[in-house]
Each structure stands twice: as structure tokens, then as C-alpha cells.
Length: 478
Image (cartoon, rainbow, N blue to C red):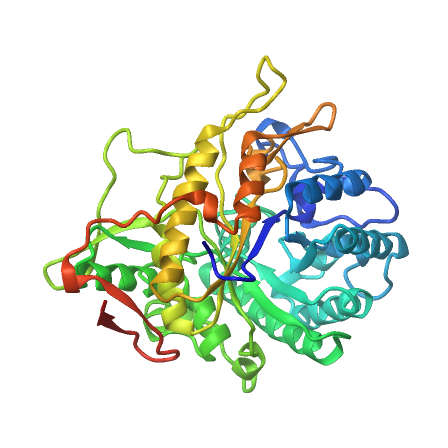
């Protein structure tokens, strides 16, 4: 089983489930605008209605309670509570989150609030968005308003979800909102401003929370997976997980080192060169605020072996290797090595803030949704996570993505990640077989998962975690 007090939850985000895009004074976000662009979203779809959670939140909380969820990670729609992004608040929007938190607590479910899951207010985008030097201050103001409203009941906070993705896809490739293709230096500047916003938000949470706050964030995790447990392959996988090897954001350390160690990594600075943002006096002190946990979203990983000089070499998967409906390879050991490597580097308790898969789910002739592939996937991943805990990684919580089938960004409604099936025409909810299975995982604290699956190990070549935060990680024989 998992450690006593382990947090079992599910996660969602505002734009993906709430709907009510023009209801009760909500302002527009960059995603509202992006969805109107021809060809931006498959099928020309949008999150205008999504799962209609804005109107159906009480029954959705009832479903969470019936599943036995201990915690629920949700995001707050910045333009719903502050339509212009700054200044006046929207009472109806504030009331929605006030009521949602109350219903969660009445159901015995701990709310975990994420401040930013990509829905930047459109009015702030028109003022330059994250390129505007005032953007960290805007975010601080917004964070303060939410802390003032909810911190008498909400004690778990996350600042920003997946900065690597919202910067790289929103301002680099342009496949996510706001659909821009900026030069790399501007992308890095946006990343730097988002990190300053994170730091300011952490400070305001600490300063104004009415109850003792637990604060973290939720970056995406890049995980190298060694193809054997030899020291050489493990070190190569660690390097792949922690190195910056391309002018892109698909890495852990450009953002993670700044937040946890107060500096940008040297390999990134060398590679990015003149594109790297100018770090003003005090910036890193603002960014590096004490965190209570390191949240990370992990779905897959990259198989790696050691090359002739120990350098990481990617090992392609063969034809027919298992994939999700999204085309991501199924890599259960990403939930073993990812938490291990991140805990080694940063020394913070790890919370898996997202993990799951998209399946081709449909309603059967019996009116039920049978999703054995999801149950198998989660069983394998959670066994790997439990093995990471056994081998020394401090992991304190797990949030399955996602509670509901929802609007999957540029994919529209084609990717179903939910434990609960949503008929988007009728808004009917049907808990899938995986929802009942996950209830048992929670009830038994992971006992239903069965024995830990260990890969064949090579005697003393197997390694256990040793944390040396802020320095080069070390290992020791098991």
C-alpha cells in the first residue's frame, strides 16, 4: 500500500470543463478568441459549453463523493473572477468558486486550487500579455484576490500549470492559444515573466493566507527511462531527464532550477546564448520562493541507454508498441524514474498532479462504459509509483487526469481522458468502469493494485534514491 495519509484525487481545469463562457459577467480569455480562428481546433469546436460544469458543479461534486475522492484539483478561471484581468472583480464569478469550495468540503473532499491553467484574460493579452513587464504584478493582484476569498478554507495551492507547454505551444509553435509564433528570445522572456509571476503569487499566498498554506506548482515532467538498471543506463536517463539539449521548452530544469535552486541551469544558458532573458537584480530571489511540494504532470517517458561516452542515447520503440489514443507511448516506469530523479534534484515531496490517458471510450449496448485499457494503464503506472516510494522517493499524492471527459485544447472533444464519460450533446455523465476501480484504489490506499512489479535487476547495480538538493545527485547501491 501507499504511505498513510497519501492524497488520492482527480484533476480538471476551468476552460476544459466549466463552459458558461459568456455567463454572469465572465470576461473572455485567449482560448475563447483562439477557438474562433479557422482551423485552430479540430472540428471547429470550442470550450463555450464544454462539460457545463459551471451549472452542474453540485452534481459533479456528488459524483466525486460517490467515488471516494480525497482531493480535487481544479483551476480558477482568471477572466471569470476578474473580467479585465486587473481591477474590478466579478461577484458572480467569485461566488461560483466560493460555492464550489463549500460543496467540496461538505463532501469531505480537499480542494487543491490552481491559479493559472492557461486561460489568460483576453484584455491582458491585448495589453501585451506575458510580454508586458507588468504581467507578474497582474498575476500577483489576481492571486491576492483569490487568497482573500478562499484561503479560510483552501489550504493547498498551485501557481502555474505546465509553463513549458503554455509557452512553447502558445507562443512558439502557435498550436495553442494565443496562437503566436514568436522568436525564441521572446518565448524565453515570457517564461521568465511567468516565473516572476509564480514567485510573486507564492509570496502573496504566504503573506495573506488565513490558514497555513501548502504551496506548489505543476510543471510537465520530461522523464528519461533507462533500458536496464545498470549504473551507466541510469545515469544516462538522469542526464536526459535533467539536461537541456535543444532550443525548446521540453525539459525540467530551465523552469525547475529557477524555482527550486534560484538559478537557470548552465547548459541552458550556454545553449540559449544571447536569447536568454536578462535577469535583473532581485529576480531570482523573487522566483525562488519556498515550496511545500513539487507537483509534476507525467504521462509518458523516453527510453534511454548510455552511449560510448556515457551520453544518453534514445532507444526507439518497435512497431506495434502500446500507445494511447493520443499516440503517446505507454511507459509505466515514467512514474518510477520521474519522481526519483526530481526528488533527488530538488529534495521536495513529489505530488503527481496529472497522470492518465486518452482512450476510444464509448457507451456499450448495456448503457455502461467499459474501459479496461485505462484500468490496465493506471494499474501499471501506480505500481511503478509505489515502487518509487519504496525505493526512497517521497511522493505524497496522486491526481488522476481527468475527472471528466472534456475539451482537450486543440484536439477539441476527440480525446477522452475522463474517469467519467460525458455525452457532450446531452451532458449526461456515466461513470466508467475505471471510476469504480479507482474508488477501490482509494479505499484500499493502493492495496487493490497487487504486488509491486520489479523489473529484473542486476544485483548491486540496482540503485536507491539519495537526495542531494542543489548539487549533483549521488546514488548508492541498494
